[in-house]
Length: 146
Image (cartoon, rainbow, N blue to C red; front, side, top):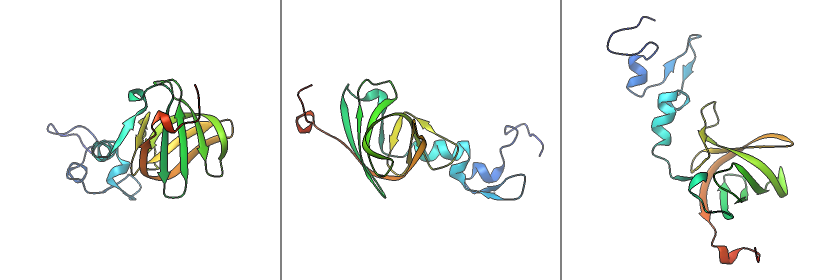
């Protein structure tokens, strides 16, 4: 592929128009798996940044398969307490990486509807099924006192 003066090296017209492109092996790559496509799609997703939460905020996140309860003790730190599903049957400390479409592009520290959450804990990496909804729980509904 050659570089032209009106577009950066490696950007094809098909990528610019939003169509899938073929990689060097001839395999069709979905637009959201390219950096430009990922950025464009994530820009339109509902969600929230970990850094915008108050300390000790608890989220209830429903994915396609599991209901997760996620407590963020000290934003903007990525350390969270998570419970839900077969990997987190008990409240477990984990590092929240962010959200992705299941590929290599990750929106850091972002809980996004329609994306997969990524956690790292002592048992390894967990990538959830797609997020269906995110609810911020009222502090009055939490066990306490804190």
